[in-house]
Length: 208
Image (cartoon, rainbow, N blue to C red; front, side, top):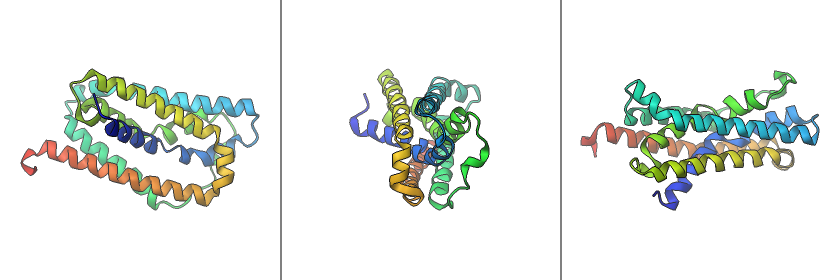
């Protein structure tokens, strides 16, 4: 069974990649005129979207890799590169345009649930964890149980972040949210580099 440090590392990686803070600006702008019940419904639908997509990645990730003959090490490197690009965007990008310009319809599933929250980063990381196991425990079914619990916990954290988005947004402000996003991006970049190195060492054992 994966140890506590490995479990926490996987949980932090997925939560940081989901990056609920990135969804706060669009949630604040679109939900400002909604009632409390509608805000609750929006947060619930967005977090359920995240949960369903990550569970689908967990359930079908191995099959997709097998179908296309993709080795886990190769996908780990590719996923690491994608996550690294996302991390660089988190750190280096300028503040986004006003997200309220996208209309006033139901935004809980698209674009909030996906691709803003459940985008390529968390989906790729879940496929990698499901394929090679948490901490590399690929032969233990317990690793899948742990990953399932991590996905549920990450979705719950996303829901809680959206529920407190309005007071947090007022407290941190745009500048505070941008700073937190950049700090999270640095952490994601470190995780991505480690994934790339791990995949490269598995693909080229002579490098070890």
